[in-house]
Length: 348
Image (cartoon, rainbow, N blue to C red; front, side):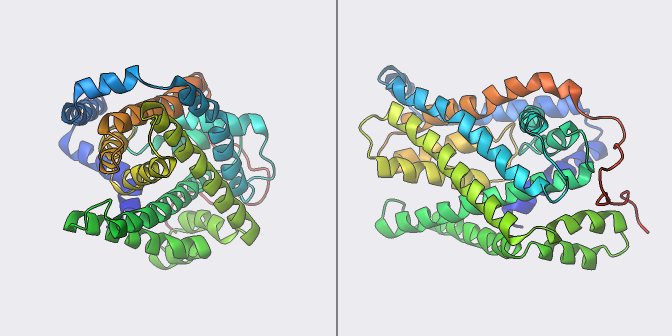
């Protein structure tokens, strides 16, 4: 199954499993946290502690400051790209609820696998609009994120395989094949998003509430799609650039080209590997340690850079968004501002 399907359906499957096994939600959260700590512990154990400390002591903290200063641009591009999709659903998207939706989404997604809570956090914060359709807009944005990240990472991996930086062994060839398959699946839907709606109509013709919501994809114009792709590409450059800055901080003598390649491949793996841990912790860090080591930059530098990137891009925004979570729109949907409000989710 394609990795993006794993990510989008993992939370639902987990809910069914928890229900079948009568696992309390608090216990499930504790188990996830233990798994996360175990994975991180295993990664740290494979890296020389002395090298980790030496990397921290020799860090050039000016590069860390640059990475921190790029955070507002990262968040702004994230919100701007989402806004382009929201124009299909809402007549107007004021800045304040847009910014609040982005931050509350990060906060609510903080403790959910693959950060799927972000969908609800954004949809519930906006003062108007159908929640399910708003969640679809977030899903669409994240699939474009994945398509861009995997496409760029695949190109980097193929180049690394051809150049001998990555050994042409079966696991790496399979990793490239999975990436190619993911891009092949996502690309047609990016070019013609109406395929999502058409496919839903064929698969669930009796569920009018579902098909009326997926009509969102059919209404996306060429201009909107171009803006979403442009915003996604720009944001990809920003957060990989943050990783490059942090890599330069912990490996000051590293060539910039190798830092970009290691950062791109780190996110390639992060997008492809299904998340079983809290906030994907362990996937990004393990990938960074592996690719920084393969490119001769040092696993310690990669691990330190990835952990600090997590702190900057996820922990800090989550703390900023936490006070907004109690204000989420938990009451029934308000009346729509236009006639685009879909019917309730039910079978006909």
